[in-house]
Length: 144
Image (cartoon, rainbow, N blue to C red; front, top):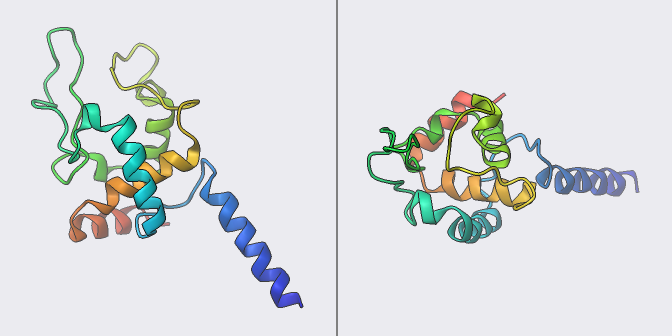
């Protein structure tokens, strides 16, 4: 009987943590999360970051009005250079969360638009598209 309680408790903790803002890792190996993330990405992110994660042209050069174009989320960009939690917070709160309130960006924060779980799912989709070597480097660099 105590084994059932332990398993039930662990399952409940796992389910709760998967919807929280402090998920330890991007669930890129979970097919359900990746599929859900692909749909959320398509509806909310692809218009700027590209349907194939390719980003906008000249993404490292500010436009005449001072904004940086959307960077790629594939292996050619810098997304994989950042820890999971930072990627989550950047997506949820926007770049001003890290760069200060005066930082100009077209990128919105998605707090109130996407749930924490949806943000983690989008990140799962993005990471699942990186080449194996990049996924491995990212996981090794940012594992606890």
